[in-house]
Image (cartoon, rainbow, N blue to C red; front, side):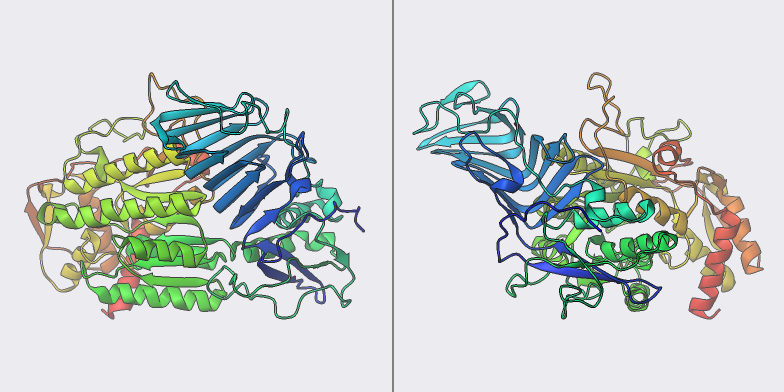
Length: 625
């Protein structure tokens, strides 16, 4: 059934694994594959050959083969050694050209990079190892130490051909004991890093081949084998249950270093069903952190991820900015959703400003991707209590960025706001226009988040995507928002306060449309823009993996029309108390979502009339009114 697989590499027996099993709905068929969740330790024959035939070892907490992009990603305490050269980082990407032998051309490292060779030790924010040229370039807070001497600067170049190093043009000399000679590979690094042609892994219908080969590519080459069902070597007894929380196997309990793969009678007609089921099961080992999952948008996002089968880690302080009872009710629904779907879910009740708690959530949750929706919201409250916004939106976001950096997170999606457009009046609001004139402190903190995210994308190559939300409404919304306040007052026969005499417009966006855009953005990590021009910088893109999008309904509605839709849904007329525009409010908002539609296929589908009707139905049921 299969072609011979490559010889197995040396595998550290401390390696931990997680078994994933899929049983076909047709009955009796089973497939098990290995996901490496502990240290990955590969020997010389796997990665590189050296002109002195010296071994090269790679170790990391996690490994992923991205064959479409022709790269290998190692994350979490990455350690690369070759003779006296050692590179350590939080995340590395190995770019290769040949899909069969993995001829590595370049290694990108980020997150506290340290390069050691001889008595030289260099540290910096990120590094690039150009294999053919045999040159390592390190940038960002560079320090080069040799013996008692230290050179500091912004850029370090290590020439492995000559053994010379320089910081900002100042020579550091050759490493002690090398005599200026190189011990690095000549030309390019070659090997068989877990990539055989797809047909060599499993022979069956094309529609299902891609997902299965992608899964098997995470196991060391040569370890998977094909056996008939029911024979020894099939599904291992006592395999880890992927539906249990925790996501990472315990390294203190050594397990067998590989699993056998069993495959019986895979029918082409079932390929699509098998692929969907396997993809769902596969995602359960790849946890997404959702901050603010007890909040309005965070709750809906976490629920949608659980319902599609994703593993979710939530973190929320559950404060009393508004009634905590509705937050607790949301959390209970998330627990029920996880139990109903079998999707792994874990919740940390903690403040994002608590650095240790954030690091714990990332480490214990096995987080691979992150969505930061926790924030101190509210335009008007920022005038009363600006310190709350600093703690949550600045300190908390810094802790998230640091955890992403050190955890080798693949993508960070975070909430920004339409309020950043401030004094801008050109409609519709475009991401490609500067936003340097915020009208309240809340908007200033969210603009700061965008700038902070870009710095991490630039320094550590952390992919970040900021989403500027436009007036989100819907079931389980915040009690301090206009729709909630209006509905309660109308039902109680009280007047509603209508600011700016109802003349301003808002791009009201239903929460389900917002969540669809958030998840689409999450599934497509930001990439550097090759057309970005430093002489004419585009605020929405960068030469770093950074992107800003508007996410709105692309159909502004006058506030009076919004109130009329609510009156129609409630069957009652509102008594309106007309007031002037409040400090910090902007007269109009209008989202240009053409970039989001082009890049992610996002298109809002809910009219204000439908969205308000759904909110009213929920409101009446939840509050029994």
